[in-house]
Amino acid sequence: MTGTPDWAVAFREVGIGLGVLLAGIGFLYACLQLGQVLRRLSATLDEVDRQVSALGAPVAKTLDHVNGIAATADETLARATRAVGALERVSSAFAGGVELVGSALRPPIVNFGATLGGISAGLRRLVRGQGGP
Image (cartoon, rainbow, N blue to C red; front, top):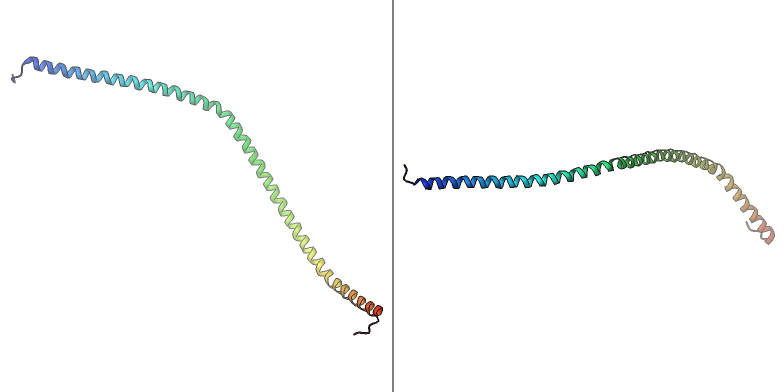
């Protein structure tokens, strides 16, 4: 014997047993509450999954529509690029033609202008009777 009465050892053992029992009951209660929270979370996630599944078809249809619009826009842009290229070629050819016509007509027009100037000077002298140079 160690000198402690048997009732003290028994009291200590019963106290430890009751403490462990209460800790177990507390752990059981916490696990039950966590189970309820997880059950509600599971129900919420199931509802979200159902709603996302319901949105899947309209979203896919909308994305297909947007994809079709983008493809049409790409085709239109390609056509516009080709049209702009053709217009640039026509404009370049037209500018070359205008330059050619301008260089061809410039000397005769200058000569015609000089001729008109000479004629008008001659008529002026004739009408006014001036005998200037």
